[in-house]
Image 1 (cartoon, rainbow, N blue to C red):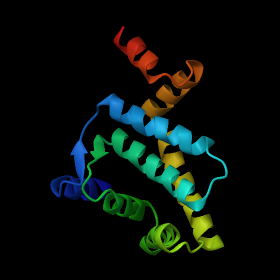
Image 2: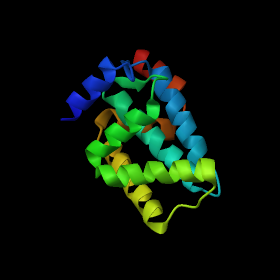
Image 3: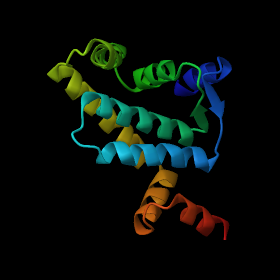
Image 4: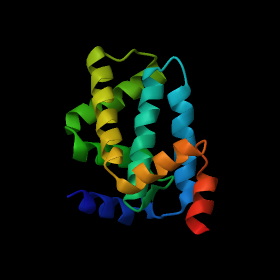
Length: 151
């Protein structure tokens, strides 16, 4: 179960329990910047997926720590996709970032599929949908949303 995976990562210090909305805001701002970036390179698309995973973790009650965030990414993604596919996505990121090798079409496709999977997971989350819809109406202002919820 994913709960066991997350619990183990929490015990290893790779995750922390948190529901502090300013941490969500940071991820959402970063995601927005990445989504507006053109052209979208493989590294940009990978970073978008990473943000979706971070946001999904937040809605599960966790945030990444500075200890092995890519390990968390690999473990969480492998729960929702084939481990080999996830390892290939990560491997191509590494090859591109450090060896300047281009990813294959298959890697691009797998990255897009996994990104869509996490986007769909978030779209099924009622709290996320409420925030997203509210933010669209109020110029993506999390502070405005927080004021409304508290006021």
